[in-house]
Image 1 (spheres, rainbow, N blue to C red):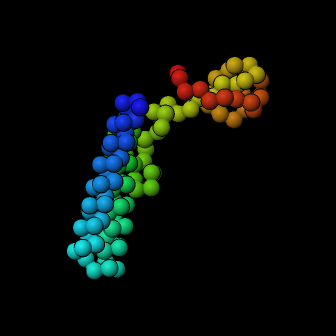
Image 2: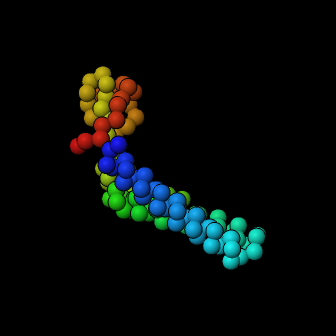
Image 3: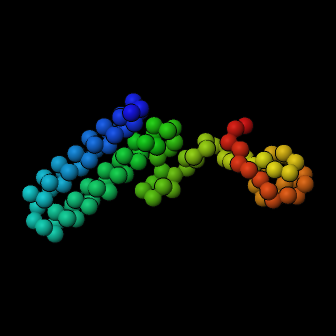
Length: 109
C-alpha cells in the first residue's frame, strides 16, 4: 500500500475514534434528546474544522460554513479555455477568432 494512502487511512481512523469518543461521552453525560442534538452539533463542527484544515493545506482561503469563501480552486486566475477548432485561448463562451463553441479547459498559464 502506498505510504500516502496509509497516512490518509490512519488520519481518518484517528478522527473517527475522536468523534466516537466524544459522542459516547456526550451520550453518557446528557439525557437522550439533548445528547442527540449535541452529538449532531459535534459532528457538524468536526466536519467544518476538518474542511477548514484541508482548505488551508491546499492553499485556499477557508470560506463560510457553506463554502461561500473567496478562495478559488484554481487560484486567482480562474479557468482558461482553448478552442478546439483554432487553438485560441479565451475565457469562455464562443471563440473570439472563429466563433466555435467547442472548447476544452486549460489550467496552465
